[in-house]
Length: 322
Image 1 (cartoon, one colour):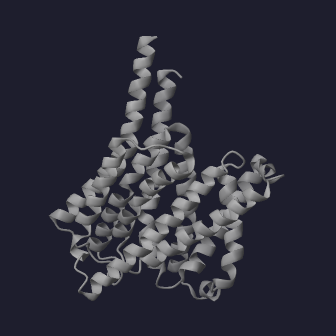
Image 2 (tube, one colour; image 1 turned 180 degrees about the vertical axis):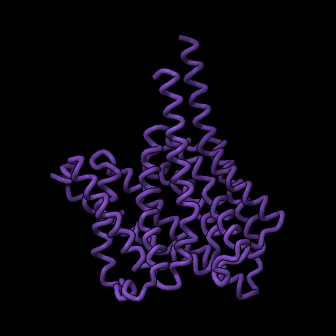
Image 3 (cartoon, rainbow, N blue to C red; image 1 turned 120 degrees about the horizontal axis):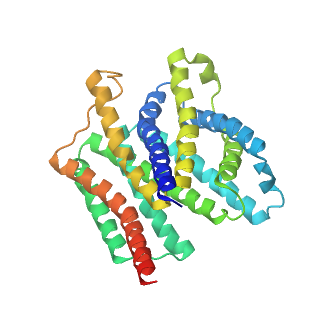
């Protein structure tokens, strides 16, 4: 690849991953607003339905649906389990926003890359080095620093925060397990087809638990919020997939570490502008909590970008020797 093409790929990768980070960063605000007029299960059903229609049309147009032909029973079982886990992730994260601010929930979700790394060690025989282990330690310290105001559980509000943290971590484990299952079937199905099956499974399994009468009672503004949540799923995941074509996986994942920073920023902008004052409040962040945010983001960034740098350095040294 010549330098000009590499520069083009770098720009395209930056554009796509920036769009994904932006939409994922502001998504919790829309999800929290939706809590006042639609249940998490019903909202997730709509998001899956909207994503199913668009993804099905795209995959049919590309002729990619033939991948489903002749799949063994074990793959179908993994797909079903992955679908259930991703539904748990979607629904539980929305529930957590009843207890946590959007930025706090997003920040708490940043344990996901580390659980995913542990899963790689357990199921795919990947290995940690000393640097990665030290990043795990700094992540844990950063989480303690950020949530230190809530460590005194004698107040009712602190119990609410603890419940929110537990729900988010359940959402994290659900997403991590889904991602590991998706990786295990990646030799037979593309990520788009895995999501297509999950969307179809989701609208069937969640239909009995969804309250469709809520759609009839929604105002125009509420419809815009729901439509945004559905479009967010398509745009963010679509741009994430495109970014993966132009950038290395570690580089893309490292950029996602900035998602909670954007969530905090967006929430503070909403509060300062006085929008939805009955729903959002400013975050209670002191110097120690802010230092915890920096440590969490840096840990997630470093654990993914530094190994990539080391690998490139080794490859360059190898070419020099040759």
